[in-house]
Amino acid sequence: MNENTVKQTLLSAVKPTNIPTIGNYLGAIKNWVKMQNDYDCIFFAVDLHAITAKQEPQKLRERTLYVLASYVACGIDPNKTLIFVQSHVPEHTELAWILTCYSSMGELSRMTQYKDKVQKEGQNKEKENIQAGMFCYPLLMAADILLYQTNLVPVGEDQKQHIEITRDIAERLNNIYGKDLFTVPRALMPKVGARIMSLQNPSVKMSKSDDDPNGTVSLNDSNDEIIRKVKRAVTDSGNEITDDPSKPGVKNLLQIQSAILSKPIYALVQEYAGKQYGQLKSDTAELLVQSIEPIREKTNEILKNTTYLTALLKDGAEKARNRARKTIKRVHERIGFIAFSE
Ligand code: TRP
Image (cartoon, rainbow, N blue to C red; front, side, top):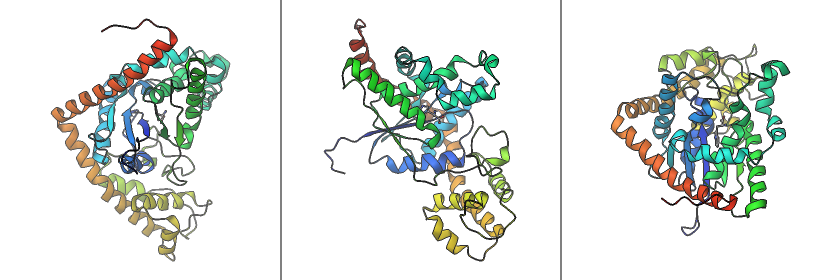
C-alpha cells in the first residue's frame, strides 16, 4: 500500500458475555492481527451490548478485562490499533439515542435477532417482557460503527443484517444533513470456512454463551480441558476423513486445523487419507494446545499487571473519545443543537 494513501478504518467488537472462545480467536481476532498494518483498526469490548442480557457485575467486569487483555495477548498492538472499553466512551450512547430518533419501530421489529427472541420468549404476550435494550441493540451497534467513520466491519454472517441497518440509517441521515455526515460502512465477510462450530453440535456456530461447556473451547481452558473436549468432540459413525457436508464434526476439526496452520482443508484431507478419527482428534488437540497456551499465559500476565492495564484502558478511552467527539460535534451542528463552549 502506498504510504500516502489514507488507510481505511476497520472496526469490530466482542461482547464480553463470557470468556472468548477459539471461535472468536480463529474466526476473528487472528485475522484482525493481520490487518493491523493495512488498516486503521479499532477493536473494543462492548459491555453496553452485554447488558441486553442479565449479567453478574463482577463477572462482567472480569470478562470485559479478559477480552481486552486477550486482544493484546493474541497480537493486537495497542500502539498501532485503538482498543478500549465501550462504556468508557459515552459518545456511543449519545449517538445511539440520536439514531433512535431516526429509525422506526418497523425496521427494528424486522431484525432477525429480535424476531428470534420474540419467538423464543413465546408469543405476543411474552413480548411485553423483552427488554427495550434488546430491541434497540442494532442502534447502539450502528452508533459504534458510525462514530468512527468506519469503512469496513469484519463480522460473521449472523451480523450482516446489523451492518445493513447501519448503512440504511447512515444514508438516511446523510440524505437529510449532507453526504459527508457519515461514512457508509461495508461488512467484510470472512473467507468461507473461518467459522468454527460447536464441538458437541457441529451444525451450530461455537458460541461463548453455549450452555454446554463441552461444545466450546475457551481461551482460558487448561491444556487438559482442551484435550478432553477435543477428544469428546462429536463426529459420526463413519471412518473416512473428508470435509463432506454430511460429516460436520470431522469438517469442523479440519477447519480448526486449517485456521491454525493457514493451510487449505483439501491439503489436510489428503494428508489424512487412510488415517483414523482418533488421530485427527489428537492432532487437533495438540495444535490447539500449542496455539492457545501462550495466549492464555500472556493474557494472565497482562491481567496481573494492573499498572499496565489501567494505562491501556485510559489511553484507549482518551484516543477513542477524541475521535468520537469529532463526529458528535458534526452531528450536533447539522441537527441544530447549540454548540457547547468548553
Ligand atoms: N453485535 C456484535 C456481536 O454480537 C457485537 C458488536 C457490537 C459489534 N458492536 C459492534 C461488532 C460493532 C462489530 C462492530 O457479535
